[in-house]
Amino acid sequence: MIVYLVTMHSHMAILFYPWQQYTAITPPYWENFANTVSGNFHIAWIMCCTVVVWVYESIWQRYPFNLIQNDALHRTTSFFGIILVALCMCFFICYAQDLIWG
Image (cartoon, rainbow, N blue to C red; front, side):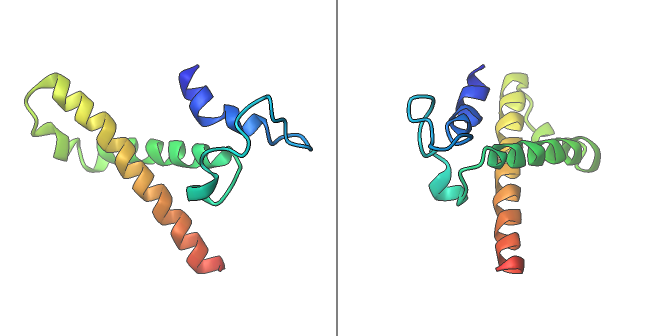
């Protein structure tokens, strides 16, 4: 529920014209840095998380994080590391898209 409220609920206000000012935050908080008001911005970085988890498990074989011996620190670092790499990948892909399409 918290993930939904943070990532998608603000998008619900812009589904109707005029924007629903009492439904959610209008405009969404991600408009300035994502250059879009669409909730698909969050879908993009969540899909990048899926790709990074796949790469982390199969290609990297958990390499950078398996050096940490403490299990709790290993899991926490892996979780936030995957999210950080996914956000970097998402912004790089958006930047590359802007470069290609103008």
